[in-house]
Image (cartoon, rainbow over all chains, first blue to last red; front, side, top):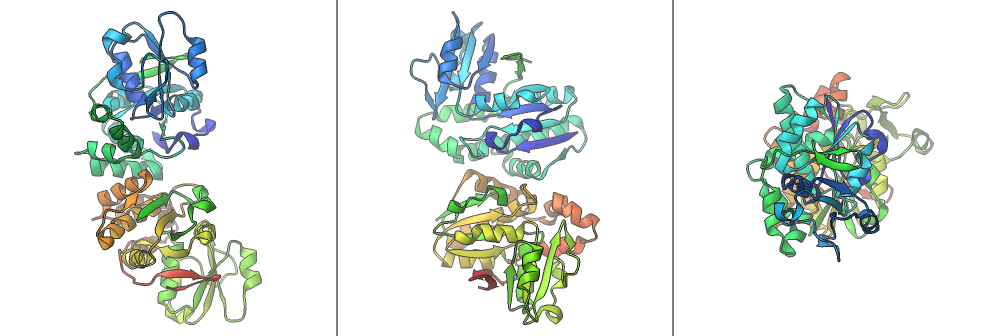
Length: 236
Length: 236
C-alpha cells in the first residue's frame, strides 16, 4: 500500500486523488470539529466553501457554523470551536460548515473514491477504516491559508505511524511522508508542544482558544470517522 | 533573527530572498560536491543551468561537470560525485557545473544579499558564516525535480539546530522550519538512515553511488563554505 502526503490544500491537484482514499486533515480545527459534531449526534455536516452558499442552502432546523481567521462568522449559530458542538446544541441537526481551509480541502479531495476526515483525536479509528477500504491513501494536510501547517503535518505523521502498525507491513510513503513520520516520532510523547508552537496554535492561544488546542491534541479520544456520502459528511 | 525554509526549488519565489542570506541546500549531491571541489583547491565553481551554457562558457583549463538523473553528462570531464573532485583533478581549475536541481536553486536565490552553499558536511561552518552576515536567513531546499527531498529537509533541520546553538537565542522559524527541526532531532544520532531511505538515496544506491551517500552524511566534516561572488562560487 502506498501513502502520499500533500503538504497543503494549495498543492492538491485533482489527479492526486483518483482511485484513492483521501483523508483530509485540519487539526486546528475543522476536522476535529466535524468529529465532535457527529459524536454529539449531529445528523450530518455539509461542507460549503462560502458564507453565501451556507446561507442559501440553509433549511429549517439547520445550523450555520464556521470561521474566518479563527473567528465565528457574524450571524452564524456556531463558530469552529469543538466546544460549541455539544449534544444540547447539535443533536439531530444538520450543520452547514464553512472554514478557511478545512472545507476547501474536503472539496479538493472529492475525486477520491472515499473521503474521510482525520484528526489527532480519531487517528487510529480513521486509519483502521482507511485500511478496510483497500485503496492507496492520500493524506491531504489542509494547512493554514496557502501554507503548510505544523499541526496537520504532525497528524499526517501520526497517521502513517498508525497505518504501519495496524497493517503490520511497512507501508510505502514519499519523501514528504517520511519527513512527517520523523516529525511525529520526535514529538509523540509530548504532542501538545508543537500544537502550541504552530502558527495557528499561537493565534488560537492569543484569541483565548487554548482549550481547543488541548482538546484537539488528545490522541485517539474519539472513534468517530466522518465520511463523505453524497454532499454530506456523516458517521462512516 | 528569522529563518524561513523553502521546501523545493519549485516553491521559491524571488521576493523570498530580498535582504536575506540564502543557504542553498542540495545534499545529494550538488552542494556537497561544490564544498568538496573548493576543498580540493578548485579556483571556483561556475553554476550553469544548461549543458549548452556550460559548453559555450568553457575556456581553456576549465572543467565541465554535471549530471542529469544522477548520471554524468556525456562528454563532460566530471559527474556530480564528490569522489571525482580530487585535488589531482581540480586544483586551480575553474569548474562549470550543471545539475538537475542544485544549480537551478543557486540561480533562484541570486536576489539574496548573500548566497551560500550548505550541506550536512559543512553545517556548522556555514551556519556560523550566515550568522556573521547578520541578515534573516532563508534555507532553500533544492529538492528532487519538482518535489521535496527528504535529505534536504533533514539538512535544513540540522541548520536550524546549529543556528540556534551558535546564536544562543531561540531563532524564530516558520511551521515548515519547525517540522524540519523535528525531523532532524528524530534522526540526529543516525542521520545516514533517512539519507538511504530517501528517493534520491535509493536511486544513488541502485546506481552504485552508496559511498557518496556515506560521504555526504558526515556532519561537519568540512569547514569550507562556498559563497557566490559575482558569477562564481568561491571559498567564502
